[in-house]
Structures are given as C-alpha cells and as structure tokens.
Length: 290
Image (cartoon, rainbow, N blue to C red; front, side, top):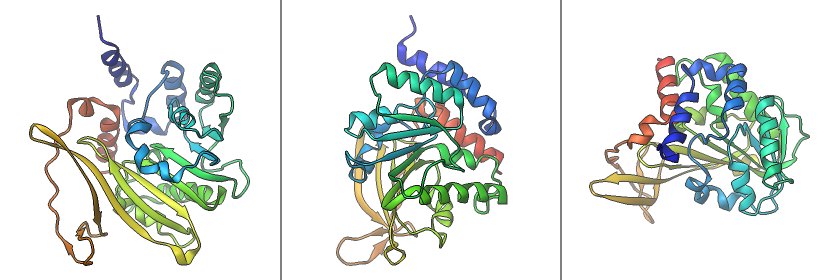
C-alpha cells in the first residue's frame, strides 16, 4: 500500500502546472483548488516561525494575502493569534477555506474573496500583512530579473502600495519568497515606502527568503541582512546562524566593523526538494525569463 506521505507528494506533482504561465491563469487555480485539499508553498509555518514570531503578537490584526489552501492561518491561530483575515482571488479557494476553518472550529478567522492589487480595506487597518509565494506569481513571465518588464513592475509596485496603505504605523509586512535580495530591493527601496528592511533564509538545501519590512518614519529606514542556513554537510547536519552579512555578501565580524569574504559551502538538494513543485516552479520561471 502506498504510504500517506508518498501519496501526498504524488498528488501535489499531479496538480502542478504544466508551464509557469499556468500560474497566471485564474481558471487554473479554480480547477486546482476544486480538487486539491491542501498544499504548502515554500514549506509550512514551522520552518520559518523562528524568523517571524517576534514580529507577530497575540493581539496583532493580521492579513494573509493569497491564502489558497494553505494552513498558515491555522498555524498562526494555534500560536495564539486569532484576529486573522485571509484573502484570495479564487472564489473556489475562499469557499473551501471557509468550510475547512468552520469544520475545525476556527470561527474567528475571516476569509474574503479579494484582489491584493486592490485591497478592499481602509487605510492603516492591520498590524501585520503576510504573504507566502503570492508575490512570486507576479514575476512569472517578467523577463530579465534584473530589469523586469513594465507590466510586472507595475503589478509589484501596486501590491506593495496596497500593503503599505493598509498597514498601521509601525506595522509589519512579512514576505516568504524565492526572490533574492538583489532582485527585491529595487522595489522595497522605492522612496514612497517607509520600510525598515530585514531579511533571512531558511530551508534544507533549497533556500527560501523571509523579508520583514516594518513601516516606520522615513528617517528610521534601515536595511539589516541576517541569515540562518541549515546546510547539508558530510554525514551530519550543521546549523549555521548568527552571521551578519553586508549588502556585498561579506561577513561582518562582530565588534570591529571589518568584513571578510565568506565562501558559501556547496549545498546538495534533497531528492524530495527536486521533486517538489516549489523547485519546479522556480525552474520553470527561470527558463521562461531567460
């Protein structure tokens, strides 16, 4: 008999897009959500909880963008955060999520059909806005990653403008993504945004980025690059953390302000990572944009 985890992986591969362009098609998502009960893009909450928990308080008013059929809102709820609103563009996803949450007794979590490019909320309403893989879809067919086409740039800027608008002063935007800092920073650094930016990484072999952007007064804008990597080393796992890097990728030595070049160890992708849709999604987009 097929093991449960193997069956789940096979279902996820079967429901994946045949090409990255499918991710831009609303019909694809409706059809997928109609048959798929659950899928976690970019790992589940347990993998990056340590990077964001200090930024989300029990009384935080949280907005999740592009909830799909993820269990992120449920994980946040079990962590003591109950004031959560989820949105998705797919009516199918919204209906199924509402039913699932009600069946589990999570009645406080609200699920709304909405477009993140035109959020139906008043200004300065949320303490935290979080997205996991939703922004990445905007970069499908973006062209040169160093210079995305105007349509992509417009959509990304519109999304960030909407997020900035609905965040309270000192509110926090959390983005879990494939997007590397040198590709995301051009958008985060736009003068109209008053972000204080931190970023970190997580993942075994195949790394994901977590950006924490706090809405502050313009004079308080800073960029703090931090990294937490779990690397696959011969015959053992080693957690390498507490290393600060500057924007050129040099390790900052504690206390003296000097920096040194750090050679990144070779990393092997696990077999399940190579089979996962996250990896296929990234590969398809890279091929499409080159």
